Image (cartoon, rainbow, N blue to C red; front, side):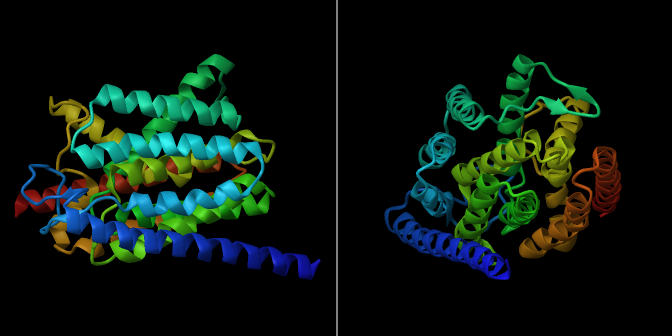
Length: 343
């Protein structure tokens, strides 16, 4: 038994290392060609309210992460093929945006709906069980699943504003999902999550703290999709892990999106219009340090992710964890807003 456990741990480390190396070297290549041929460049003279960098930087870091996921094709099981096809479509919905500078919202949404549909039907990842609150009818569950997965894709994109912020949060989430999957022997979720850890890590070392390359829309949508689909599979299986575990693990990016929409509607602004009033931008204006802003957000999220793992089978406790985070988030936000206004 001990030999089998050692073999399993060694296998996990080997997969993480392999994915990391693939992602790292592909990202270096992409960085070189982006600078050489001036493609996938996030220019400093572009008028984007959420832009915080001071030099033009490649924004195709998601390409390396995507190639890291080629490891899933080593498995002959059909579910990995469905996953990779869906992943490719979601990735393209953002990569085209990175390449052309602008992609029509209808085109982007259509691609994301196709990718998510392949995933939820091919992987049986339809969210219906939200007990103890509600059990959704199957067809409503399909709509809810599509809406939720696309929402998470965009949530990761919204928090992608500082060096290491979104990729660091994703690393924490993938690690949390990996622990949960390991504990309930969910092999598919475990395998994909450790590939995600390795692939994201290969990009992360080039993004934090210096920001030599950015994740881009393709990378952000892709990581959000992977998180959402893994949580859907994990919490809708017979593992007894509550669906609220998914919300508790992702409460920061999810609440960032919801809070931003509420804030903009209250101020009579377009709900999805980008601005510089997110929590991470307020923190930056307070401390004036790009990588340290990401570290602050990581530390804010870490206790809630640990609690989510401890209570992953306890729905009401997980709901309380979410409420607790929202209260703390709002308190910090209001404090920072008042401080900046005073200055």
